[in-house]
Image (cartoon, rainbow, N blue to C red; front, side, top):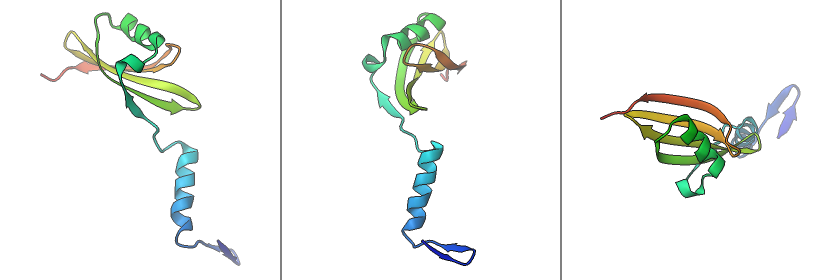
Length: 102
């Protein structure tokens, strides 16, 4: 980086590195990864099943948000698709639902 008067000039490789750092600091780069249902903590599964008895869990992902793991759980029950965001200790942060596509 060079400073010329009030102007800052970046070398070609500094721009992508600077952008990457900004995105990392802003939390815009996802650390989300798919996991097997067997890897989901029992407290998360219990919270989802208490909200929707009989739910068939179809997909699970985990992502680190603000230093903690948050699990996104998708499932189906009685023709309705559900999506939950749940902390590792079973606190439901978000719940969405819509009619399942046939």
